[in-house]
Image (cartoon, rainbow, N blue to C red; front, top):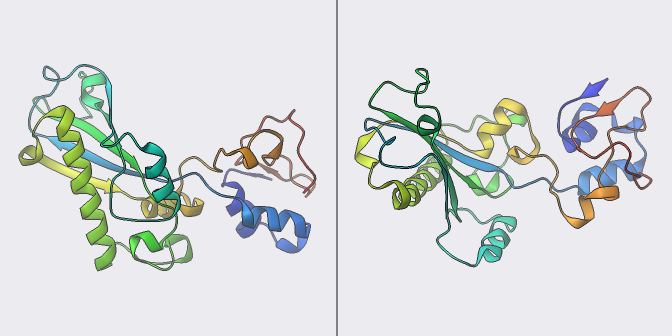
Length: 225
């Protein structure tokens, strides 16, 4: 069996814990996932191909990036720390499926806090929670979407009044479609205690069972579970 789910989901949800050593379960429970993403997908009824170059934009409102990461790690909701703007239709202007002629398609991305509480819900879609019409969730999603647009306008110029399609994917969206732990897109966090030989390997202690989630080189020694 090969699991393409993340390490925590594999070990704590897909595998019978009685088949694992207590140390393995403890390690999986203590593992920390990468911070999840929030992405706004935008289409406007103006052509930006002549206004902006074929590039990506990084918008940092503050130089204190470490403080923003600390806030995210603490699970504080509400403020977009920084954003990344990717111009899909500028990169591929001849792709008819991106948007009609005279329109522009781009994405605005940022990091969000882990967990469900930051979005006003106690559990997530992996546990069957129906969240999309929750008032607190919608309010926080709209707040972050507005901030993403505001940051993108700093590099693209005003476009809010030209939006014809806007859809924002949150960590709960990611969890809904992929069942990823904490709604992350990138698996386990790359931190000193989860990198190199400290990162779980692709082999599990169950014979014939492998996990692709940890993403560690197979020839790197791993500590005992």
